[in-house]
Structures are given as C-alpha cells and as structure tokens.
Length: 140
Length: 395
Image (cartoon, rainbow over all chains, first blue to last red; front, side, top):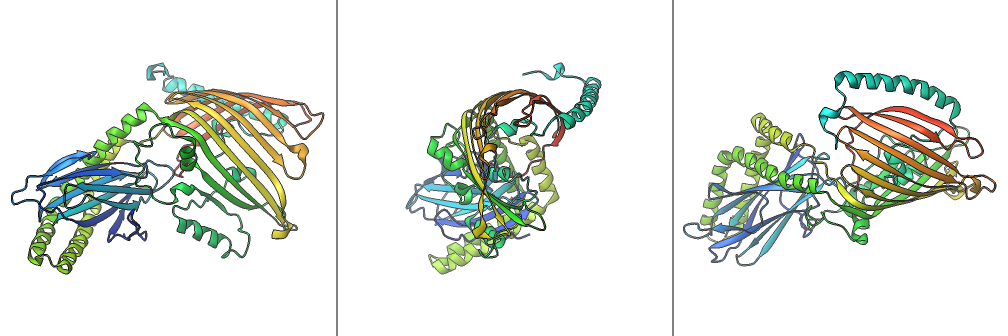
C-alpha cells in the first residue's frame, strides 16, 4: 500500500523516495551518490532523530560490518579503491516519542571529497510503529 | 518493590475482587445519596490536565484531532470552521507545536538528561481547543475553550529506561539485519546493474542519475515484497516481542503548568460571546520509578459568578509496584469569591490493582468536599479501566 505522505530532507528538499506501509511498518529507500575522491577509507555515523530509538545493519562488500548504533564506523580496504563500491545501510526506527510520529535518520559520511550529511524523514503509521530506512550509498 | 510471591494468589485475588465489588456496591449507593458529586480523585485528576480546554468545557471527546504537521493543523482548522467562516461544532484539537516539524538533531541520548526550562517548555508544550453545544434546542449556545499545557521542568530519563533504549538499539539493529538478510539475494541483480551502469556511464551525470533512479525503483518494490513476506513478518514479530512495549519514563523533579479559558456564544453568534470559566493549574512533583509526590495549586474561576471561584491546594503521595498502586490525597478547597463560606477538604485513598494485563480495578475511599454550603460527603467508588491508550501525549 502506498502512503500519501511525502517525507522531506532536513535541508527542505523533497527526497526521491518511495514508501510502503505494511502492518505497523513503513519503508523508505534511497540510493545516494557520495564522492570519495581518492580516499581509501570513509567513516559513517548514523544518528536517529526526533527523540526516537533505532538500530542499523551496515553491509560492506557483502558482509555485515556493524549492527546496532553506528558511530564513526571506518569503511574501506576494497581492492581497487572505493570508487564504484556500494555501502548498504538499513536502519529500523521505533517510535518511542509520544509527542510525534515523525522519525528521521541522518547518515554522516566523512573522509571523501567533502564531509556530507544526508537526512531522511518519514512518519510511522501508528503510535509505537517502526520505520525502515534502506539507504544505498554509491561511491563515485 | 514487592516480589510476585508476596502478592495474593489466584484464589486470594478472586476473593479480594469479590470483596471490593461488594463493598463498592454498598458504598456507591451511599455515595449517590450523600455526595453532591465530584471526581474520583484518581492519580490524573490532581495533575495538570493534558488538555485544559477539554476540562474547562467538561468534555471527554471521543474523537480528538491531533495534527502532526503544520499542513495537518491548517487543514483541521479550515475543515472545522468552514474555511474560517463559522464557529466549529463539537470540535476537539490537541497539538504539540514544537513537534509539528521534524527534529533530526534531537536524539534520545541528548534529550535524556535534565532540560533547561526553555527547552522543557518547548518540547512539552501542547495547545488544546474545543467547542461543544452547551445550550438547549430552544437556546443553542456554543461553548469554546482554549488551553495551554507545558512542563517547566520535566525530569530526566530513568536509568532503567536508558538501559532499555540501549538494548533496543541492538534489537533494532538485529531487525535491520533480518530485513537485509531477506533482501540480500533479491537485491543482488539490481546492485550489480547499478555498478555496471555507473562504470559504463564514464562520468556522464545524466546516465548515472538514470541508473540511480532505476535502482531506487527496484529496491522500493523489493523492499515492499520483503515486508509482505510472512516468513519475514514472523521473524520480526519474534524480535518485537523481545523488545516489548518500550515505555519511556522520565523521573526526578517536574513542574507542570496548565492554563485555559472558555467562553459561551448564545445562538452561535461571535459578537454575543462572554467568558464562561478559566483555570490555572501548577503541579510540582517528584517522580521515581515506584514513588511519586505531587503538590497541586489550582484556581478555577467562573466568568459569570465570582462566588463560584475555587482554589485548591493539596498534594498526593503514590507508591506503585508492577501490578498495584496505592496513594493518599489531601486537597483543601477555598472559595475566594464567596464571603462567609469556609474552606473544605478532601481526604482520600486510592488502590489500583491490575487484575489482568491492561485491566485495572480502582477502589477509592475517603471524604469528599461536598457542596460549598453543605457538609462533607462520603467518597467511595470502584472503577474498572482498560489501559489501551494509543493516543499521543507529551512528556
């Protein structure tokens, strides 16, 4: 089922995204480019906003490299450098803030051409519901 | 805190309930004859009301609009007022202005400690607005009320809540891992196609953007398929069961303020409006996991007859365990606008007992205020409540 809400990024732009609502879960996905320049490693920090709680699973080169809270995770060591590689981040956010149904997740990448933060937002369908963010970073 | 083994067993519990029901049946009958009314002094009545506007109109609306964005708020108001052309009819709205927009910068960790007063007010303020028909068919009168509630101090997250949230991060990480494991094989072709397309694009931004859009569309539909997969749902249900309710408790010092006013509009005419009632509630309290001490300062004014003004000063002590709560309350009520009327007091004790998960029986016994010019009355009631709250509140 497609929901009508259109989440926006913290920077006020409409993000190119799709949402699916299923039972008490909503789903958001995004494929995002990140310029790594000549860097051999980048670091990733994932911040759960709106006073909610969440945990992530990060996959690098087919393997889970972090699960739970992610703060300053170093990613790299790929043969042939980072360019062209995918970093798969899935974050599940549980609504615990009784004042709002907003959820938001900020993915901060550092060490590439520039340090960048990418913030995405979506509302849970029901109080206490969960939101799943599937964000694929493409290193260029 | 009492252990489970110290509580009444099934047989003892049944006897206790039967005794309470019998006692309450007798007491309620006495109350109906002797009392002039008054609310059961439950835990929440001494606190500041969550929605002062509803209290001032004496409403318990079955349907309350709770807009989540500025656009929702505007739509609610426009719908209720016929695009700002009339007074809304039987309308109830509650909103937390600060939370109408998303706040990605606020994490549970950086909101866990004590908040300074300005931060606390911003994060806990709610506004409430209500209208109701309070007249008769012959003389329709619309009642309108508006209220504001905020916590000037709002405590900090309890240690047990912090521990639960840290555990929740690991659990939700595991849930993300389950989602990824179901998605992994399905997404591999889309990921490979994206990588190949970007290599082939050779820096051509248009081609890269097209490949990204195609990848997003593919993951979107694959993700939806995972969510609909019964095997995935079963695996997630297990993790969610481990996570439980995730109740967030703040403890420590609280100072809650609520104020509101109501007006009456005979014949629904805006220019015929007059003040009806107004009220101010101030409740300092100290809350821990099992103990609460609450003081109350409450003034309710009558916009028509000042002799009906009431001022309450009092407090309540409450001890709670996992399946019961016991409390005592004393409130002194004076009538500042009525000369020669002495103050009265209410002294009551309340026992709440959870018969079954989410089903509470509440027994109240004590002495109620009675009418301003009459004697005190017996207060004895038994109530049953289902704790199935799904509405949003601000703490």
